[in-house]
Amino acid sequence: MTSRYRGSGEASYHPQLLLGLMIYGYATGVFSSRKLERATYDSVAFRFIAANEHPDHDTIAVFRRRFLKQIEPLFVQVLGVARELYAVLSRYAWVPTPARRRWSFS
Image (tube, rainbow, N blue to C red; front, side, top):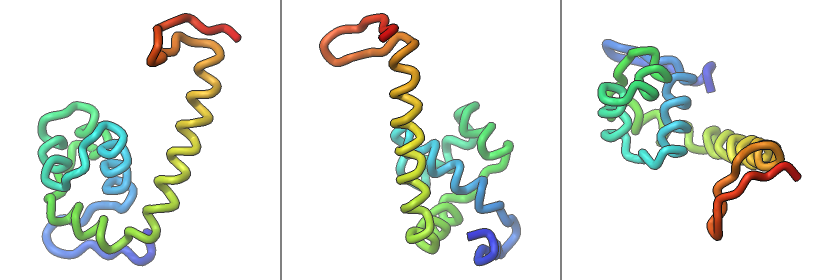
């Protein structure tokens, strides 16, 4: 993805930055490129991920559209890691469950 990415115009953003914004945005329920852009101004977490940069919503949208085929497997990997992490943490930490909240040390 990095080799095929050539930012153009005034500001060029590294693909890792844009991908990080998208992954964190999807994980927190922010899907729109306009909302992702806005979050880089309003949210400390997004600002940290974006290294205090503020990519334009059009830049995010074009990146998403252009690299969709390469991004899809990365999202699957992120979900796999999240599932594994949840399995590990659920053995040793407090886990919210739909029925009740409990401490689990199984």
